[in-house]
Structures are given as C-alpha cells and as structure tokens.
Image 1 (cartoon, one colour):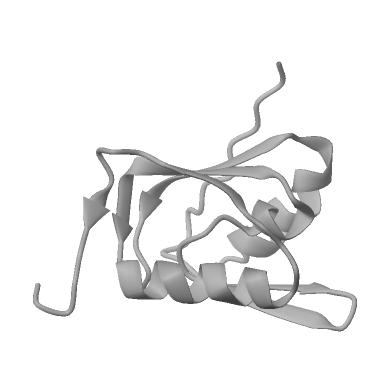
Image 2 (cartoon, rainbow, N blue to C red):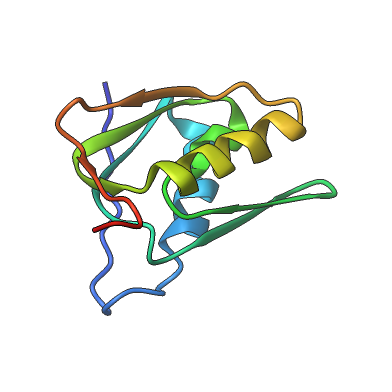
Length: 107
C-alpha cells in the first residue's frame, strides 16, 4: 500500500486542501491527523462547491475519510459538513477516532 503525507510548513493557508483533493484520485483513503475547524478547504466538483473545515476533502470523491485522534472536532461544524454532502447526494464513508478531541461552544 502506497502512502503519501501532505504537511503544511508555512503557518497555514498553503493550499493543502486543494493539493489533497488533486492527489486523492490516486488513493482509497484520506486521513486528517491533526488540527481543528479554524481553517477551511474549498473543493469544486462540476457546479458544486464544498467548504470543509473538518472532513477531509476526499469525501467529495466518495473515498473513505478518517478523522484521527489529533483532530479537534466541533460537532456543530461536523454535522453541517455532513449535511452539505448529503444535500449533494454524497453519503460520506467517514471514520472518527474515539480519541479525537471534542470542542463545543462552551469550551
């Protein structure tokens, strides 16, 4: 199994989401291993535009996506992203680590 890691080295906003989207056509699984919902990834497919802050961009291509234990998950943002996928007829194949961190508006 071939693995590829995309890591940003310029303090964010380097375009990691677009790079992962471009490369994901060659892989079966896309994993997000750290970070939170403070940054976004925009992906266009046809006439649809998806804006993700938590879910890996591979979800748009129907790939298995994994949210790892180093990710800080805001359940409100996560459910909004899942709803966006559902509105476009996409059922995400999403796995979330039981050790992922959860943050709410009360934190």
